[in-house]
Image 1 (cartoon, rainbow, N blue to C red):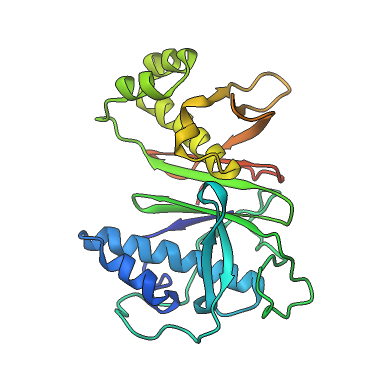
Image 2 (image 1 turned 180 degrees about the vertical axis):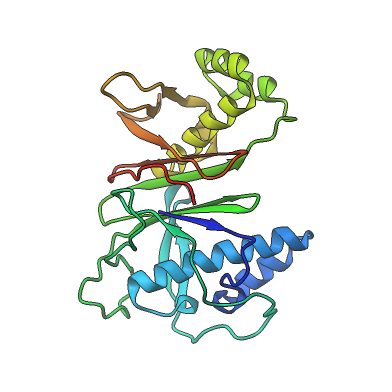
Length: 256
């Protein structure tokens, strides 16, 4: 996993983006939100490009059922038009390996026939989430699923009304007792789960987060799917909640 500070100078910029991605970025009315989206998207492409051994600008994304992202492959060269206001290169943020260390991840799951790395696989799973000035990027090996979510905690949100509509009754009581931090803590677990499973936002009402008990991790599941998945909450920064749900080994929470 990578924890990325989107406002840090020298982060990857527009050069890795396709024309369609540049057009999407330019639709952001707020320049700060536009810049953060560009950095998050470009950093994701740079990380995946390094794992696959191909230029980031030659990566594209498609979606499968439930809106889950997959890697595609551009045959054209890097995109060189459009704004170039960001630096390219520099740090990619904090890399969190499955064992909780800061070592880079290894291996490749590129879906492209053009990837000639001997270790190239075809099942790389990945997920991106960003909120405010932070982004999380999670990558899982072939045959695994991963979902991640980070949210800036908003104390002004009408959390009880939203919880009453979206959460299970016992979860609403937890939010009533603990306030906004618990609301967003539960939300990140639920959203990471629906991103990993591909059930989509429509399935969020069916999810349930079971608190950790002695000797067992916290679990998240859905009435519409069999089984429960372990959830790991991450310490990203003060004022943020974040979680990862995966069938692979989960990283220890780390602060950057």
